[in-house]
Length: 346
Ligand code: NAD
Image 1 (tube, rainbow, N blue to C red):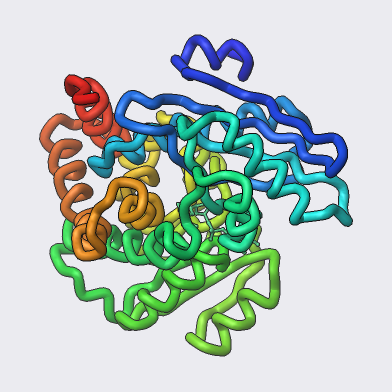
Image 2: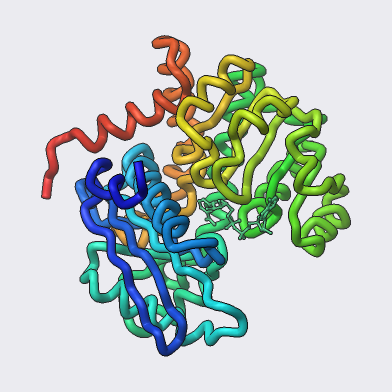
């Protein structure tokens, strides 16, 4: 099915193409669902090979946000924006002002924050023309440390479920991507005595982790062949597919990247190989939960409890999967679908 056909077939409420030719801004804002609240999700800035690729990414990511917010028990719907990166050099300030105006036109049906290729500073700029941004000072701040904290809590849950202990001393984690989340997560893991193997096309990022935490650096293409206990995807999506799963030599896959499975069936392929998979939209919800302080009026303490509660959610998902003989991905989707099916209160 083409991405265009998917828009109707998969129930997207609204997909908006926006352009401001003066600064080279071209973006797709995909609102998958506002059933539980305003469609909420990050904005990705990426040099897509084609508009079709950008649309496919926006659709996949926004649907993932619906499931992520629902599984986390948040009164937020799912959406995502992708900006097609203009040729360099470009005026970044003008680009994010244009983006802010596009977001503002949706009148609060869509709330956005940073994602791959964007920073909280970009949304400080967008916030000059729209109030519908999160992840900036006074509105949740940088989500990445919270995403990392949630993934770390999730890894402890995986360890408890799979090995019967949360003691990670001497375990090996292979981290794919040492950006905002990957680097913060590396700190958490190293603090618990985990030995790190890391990769990133940005050599400066891996060098820093090698120096600070004694991480071993491998080339990005080699990360799937590393013999480790936990594979931690913290870069891009679709990294769990037939070719890569065949190469994995780990017992747990738990990381921050969105849409890690190339297709849902790859959750079954992982299970058949005896690998425990932490569904990405459950384990990486810390960032969006952190934004809920401002968006939903939650207290800081309640937000922290919810981020750490990702461990409890995963325990429930793993128990359901084991009980019904289904993949952890399917069990997590079922949980989200239950939340979406509850009668609306607004
Ligand atoms: P980031 O842009 O800061 O970091 C991504 C890193 O991955 C970069 O250092 C990049 O060089 C590296 N990378 C790119 N291609 C790679 C490859 N083939 N192999 C290894 N590394 C590669 O992004 P981030 O904010 O750290 O997010 C990482 C992932 O987590 C993304 O998939 C994002 O959607 C997801 N995520 C992030 C948050 C958040 O709060 N930032 C929340 C939920 C999900």
